[in-house]
Amino acid sequence: METLFRFFAQFQPISTDAQEAIREICSVIHLKKNEELQPIGHTCRTIYFVKKGIARIYYYKDGIDITESFSFENSIIARVESLFTTKPSRKAIQIIEDAELIAINATQLFRLYDIHPSIERLFRKIFEKGYVETVNRMESLQFHTAEERYSALLHEAPDLLRRVPLKYIASYLGITQVSLSRIRATLK
Image 1: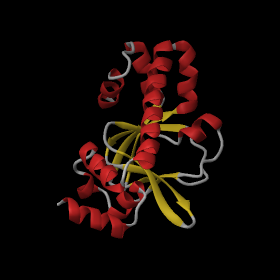
Image 2 (image 1 turned 90 degrees about the horizontal axis):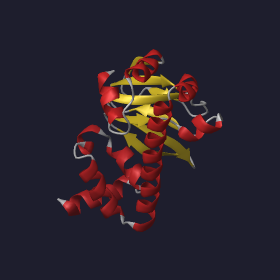
Image 3 (image 1 turned 180 degrees about the horizontal axis):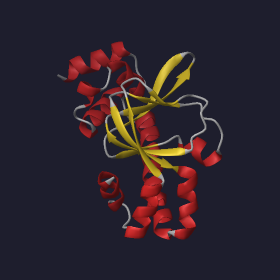
Image 4 (image 1 turned 30 degrees about the horizontal axis):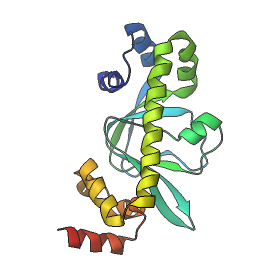
C-alpha cells in the first residue's frame, strides 16, 4: 500500500485518516498474463493501481483487436466512461504480464469525498491527468506520423518492446504489424 500512497503524494497530500479510509476500501489482487481484469460489457466499479506488471485497455472494431492504452507500474487504470456513467463498457482490460494490482472500490471511494475533501481533490487531479493523456493520445493520432508515434512511445516506455507483444504495439499505433516491422527496420 505504501507504493500507492507514494503515487498519490505526487498529486495531493492526504492526511493519515484519509489514507486509512482508503486502505479500508482497497484489496490486493494478483492476475496472470493474458487474464481479463474486466471483460467487454462489464460495468466498471473499481479503480486499479498497477503495482506490478502491465495491463492494456482494448476493444474490437470490425473484428480486429485494437489496443487503446497501456498501463505500467505505478499508474491507475479504469474504464472511466463506464465508471462515471454506470453503463457497461465496450472495452476490456487485459493483463499483459503477471500483475499485482490494488483494487479501489469506486462506490465506497466516492462516498469518502464528502468526509475527506482531500480525497476528492486527489482523484480529481488523477482523472484530470488521465484526461490530458487521452487528449494527447488523440492529437498524436491526428498530427503525428506512425514513425513519430513509435519513437515517442519508445521514449515514454523504453522497455516496451521487451514486455509487450508487437501486435498490441502495432494496434496501439494504429498500424499493421507489417508496417511496424518496416518502421523498426528503418529506425535501427
